[in-house]
Length: 284
Image (cartoon, rainbow, N blue to C red):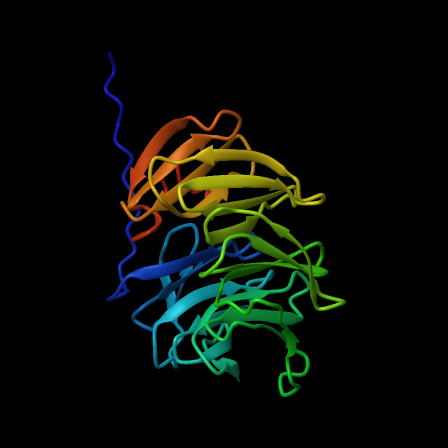
């Protein structure tokens, strides 16, 4: 029997403390890019194909909990423990805007139109900043009970926001126009990960030992799978035939979307480096 060759991950050095967030850009005319957030406070931009370092966004005075790129990969946004969210020029590395908050910022996301920035964190409120008017007060989205924001993403062409909390279960569905919660996707534990699939059909959530998939238009529960260990993050493949989930044991596991059966593993490839193995290359 022919011996299978081992998959060798592409390891990208640079951060001096744990990496807490990774985000790829969409494919652009110049390729695609990867931004990483770390507790060292030095978010880094890399070539998404090779992993080569492009630059470091220097300016935060605390851990950076989240980082993302806008659709054309021209700007980067970061959320930090220094009570600020910042927007950077991804070509030059220059800071464009700094949005001060009253507490730690845990999440940030560009709108699909790239005209607005969404932030949330320990302040227990969602903020929407108009990037065309950076000095204007942000739009605030508040609800009861007030709880720290763990994750927040845009949905439905920027008309809807999905958010989760550290303290309570469920995913809140916000109507941006009315600034109110219109429904909640029920989960037993707090959701540590919320993602909308690239084709806009599914919402993927991770709570406790469970990964759930929801209809992104009608918000009904489509599938729910129990995982072998607590899950911190989950992501659906673009082809929807598989999904990955990772947690505190530093393994990223590959599962069949239709059955929930585990079909592969890869050690630490997403949590501590950038991997090009067959399991994790879906994110490209």
